[in-house]
Image (cartoon, rainbow, N blue to C red; front, side, top):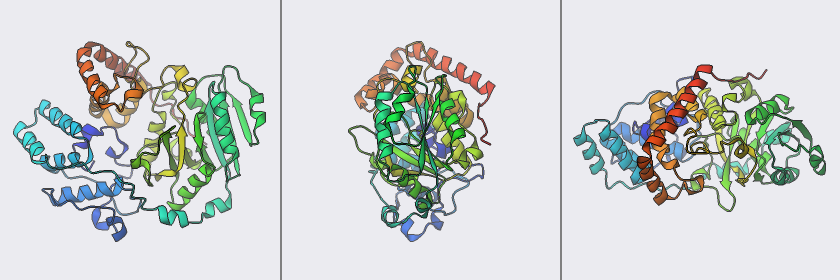
Length: 442
């Protein structure tokens, strides 16, 4: 990563890793054109020229850069002061203090650390803005891919959610793009084939008796007739141009994956997700990709069955293969967050909050994913960053006073937390020993 202090704050981020072709996503500044440089504010307060260039490259990616300039293939170390400068610009001041404490407790030179931290105290955090860099050209673009009308297979796994499923099916009936099929893999206890007769859709209904999300998605992909796969869920709402917005994005950016944006019911798209950019995550509830992608990277790993982060692991495989994935705000969907059904019935809806005090924290599949791709050290840093913040329920995850209180409670119940984490680490070790369960798509 550009700045080494990011290993504390984003230890298991996709962009910490180089692709198999030994490339990063960060463009070398000397190869950016004038329009791309227009996205960037030059910061001359860094000590070194290299740190200034790395900051510019970071800004380009954060602001929606999607060009084809040469990228960095290695990163030089920059000074401690420049590292503190960078994280002050991009993270809340409490996280800056967190990094300082970690480094002091790691026996780094306290004089160098405190000096670097103190000398950057006047650096303010940069406000995230909607650059909308590609929107004008995108809106004026006429998609020949849509004109060719390729078959799209919309995949929806469902489990005991007919009440919510009906809404997404109604939304699909209203799509302005018509050449698509809907593959529903129904795992409901009271499977009702007659439910689907009320909709004017090209259905492929698969009744799956085993409650298994990743098996469901894999089965749907294998049965898909389309050359494109659109992934959705049974508790979301989409706009009438959802399919066409994904298709247009794939062609406009010459990408193989269009990663749609979620936002909660009653809210708006977060500012940092409101413009096109390199996708830094993959969510199986809102995405479109060419079916050939599965032939390149394999299907979903069934080690995540009844657990979490199977979509994140798949997205990382896509990234490591150098496959272009674009975060697409125009193919957004409203996340209803159904209160019943789905993964909630499997006991592991949340990745970091266990179902009871003696269950593993985090869910073992999370550590399986982190350890397999990022190693033990980065996994431990991730635990340090996430576990204390997961003490309170999910609905309070953005409540800063409660997050601070959660950190204090973690200290008070430290033996219990150690037990939870140790249990998760042990179960993840079993998964790693067994290996991935990734089927290749013929």
